[in-house]
Image 1 (tube, rainbow, N blue to C red):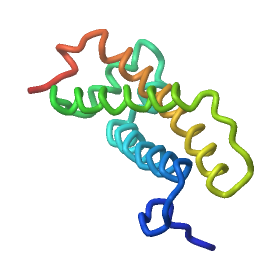
Image 2: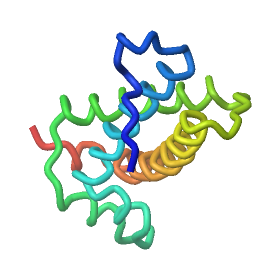
Image 3: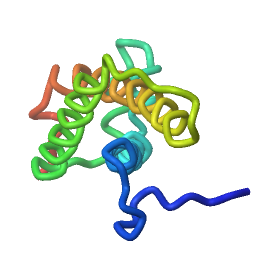
Image 4: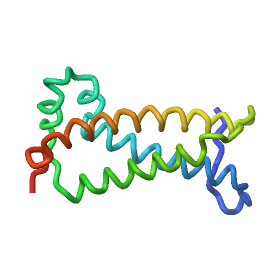
Length: 126
C-alpha cells in the first residue's frame, strides 16, 4: 500500500490537500466523540430507551461544550463543501469519502444531542 503524506509543508500542498487534511483530522475528532460516548447506540435505540443509553457515560459541561463546538465545526465544513466538485484523483476520492463519513457522524451526533437535550440537567454530571 502506498502511503501519501497529505500535510507535509515541504510538499507545497495545494488548497485541496489542505482541505483534505482538515476534513480528515476533524473526522477523526468527531469519530472519537461518537465512539467514546457510544452515540451510535443512542441514535439507534428506541426513543423511549435512548436517554438511558446515553446515561451509560458520564459527561460534564466542559466535555459537552467541546463536543458541541466540534459538531458545529463539522456542520460548517459540510456546508462549505456542499457544492464542491471532486474528480477521481487520490486526494479527491479520499476527501469525498471523508466528507461522506463526516456527514454520517454528524447525523449521529445530531440525534444524540436531541436525545440528551430533552433532560440536559440529568445528563450533565459536574
